[in-house]
Length: 222
Image (cartoon, rainbow, N blue to C red; front, side, top):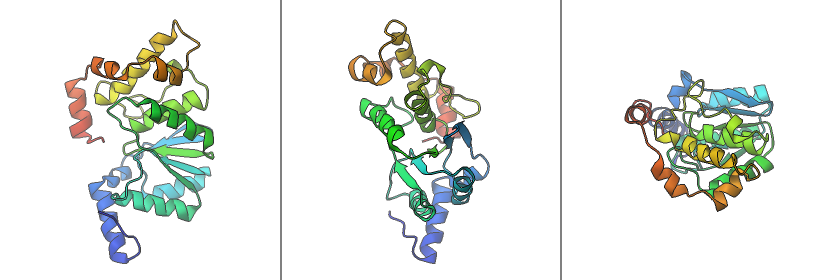
């Protein structure tokens, strides 16, 4: 369904859907907002009040929405409206939390970090998995930090549970780190394009049942 925000009832209906169905109310208790660097921030999906406050506080120029553009999302309708009102750029990126990013998505991340205006703020729903992936790629592509030295895919303080299905990205990056020990000149994107067998790496990952139950059912992560 599409949400119209140009009538009072339409706005109320969309707000209720965003807060209750899309779980935006959880941000009232756990914002999961963190600074990655002097020019980059990460969080769970902000409420519109949080969005306005943080944009003004930190001079944010770009928001990277890792849930992707979605005409059927009330939350996305509000976020798009707020970004337009605040005069900031909204970049919609679709990335999954329970599968290994394909080469196109890794290449797209590099492109995003090379072309957006900073300071920037990235978010998904919970700010743990998809945001952790992109924050890791930000550190690697933008800041030149080796993958083994990145620190954005962690349980504390971000909430990333690596033994759940969301840990596939950890397993994937571990394979790259191992390969790089004997091929230090090969970058992540080159490895992903020419060496890595994404399907084989995915099949080799062993998921923890309890961890997935917590991540998928108790926390209801996307």
